[in-house]
Image: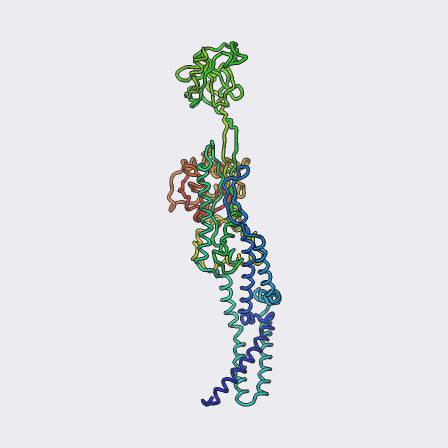
Length: 605
């Protein structure tokens, strides 16, 4: 080109021709979207804009519905059951209805175009699955080239001279661009895959969401730990508490799959809803009568017993006053004692030494309900009344002929049972998604949203395969025959539910009952009996975390309020343990919950 006054006109003509042909080519490319995978890149901006608008509409509708409730924690409820509950907000139905109507009207403006685009989306998905061959894509692209060439010939014929030449140059440029479009589409496809699996929300909003959920878990943990101070006066407290933890990537992947880019303010109410669905807290009051029988040999202590006094008067004995005792002998002071007729502490005729005096059980009464084991006979009512209730240590006298006595104790127990069930966050989240949202959720989880710096992927809860049952023990660990026998016995019971106090396959297991059973029945020659978690710790030699190996026991503290070890499992290496949670399963001990409660490792002799 020669510089001059006409060049500017030529540029304008070329530009006009280029824009004209570009508009025509774009229209044709759009028509070929269903067959040509390269067209996905050419029309992506329009599709993304509509996708964002649809997400915005869905978010608006869901958030309006969510305003109908607010979170409330109720520590006590009907039947002594405590749950995490909602209470209705004060927002009127009329206001909510108006917002829903506005949302519905806005949705109609994109509905028609949305369905038109579904065919295009399906072709995109088919191409990504490999249903379109490269030859087919090339054929579709070639048809676009042919149409562009035809248009170029028409322009050249009708626009002689410099205007036509410039138009042809523009068309040739477009043809070259189209020829390179398949390569650019591949590059764009790769970048699109990265973008499509990346969390779009800011770090600030992601951390705010996760911190809010973690704060709810911390509050739940405090509620359980304070149960004895908020519910005082019980003889016993039983705890069946599941692990309080979650995978933060699951939470963020869920919100991203549902809403795309989200803010904490947008999802904060739903955070509380999800926490309530993941955890169920039950508090029950139970009254039990516990009867225990044990054998005590001559000379051994019966322990501290409570005694009262009685005489042979009508006040003390009623219609039996003045008569013989239940054994037929007449009572004498410093000799005769009675036991409860319905729940005798020791058998009739047993000789007992208390307070330096040897007594013989010759009579019966009705006083166990007052917490009394022995009623001591006196010659006068005043002396019997002066005795009141006294606590003495009692011994089996040497004069007992059979050298041992069956001792039965009965007591009423008022117990508070606390149960926390963790329904698994992943299960809860999947129940709240449709099929397409669940696919996006799996995609984000698979890539950690391409932001694995957000949370420590090495300390995420779980890690034991599906439902904690699928963990495979490394072959090098199984080369230790003792450990191999332990894990063979332990894996028989994977999936068994937690049962408080359970210690055998027939009754079920709690954490210490499970470990005690495995130790005693794995064939390694051990027999520790039925131990608590703290009792098992006493059977072991301390091992540092750096020296822990498969087969060692692992102990945790303060998983509920008790002194010493409150939970125990069997360490299997690679930061994994098998333990009786609910149910028996493999669990990653690197999660923040278990690390917070880790007490130490122990090795059996």
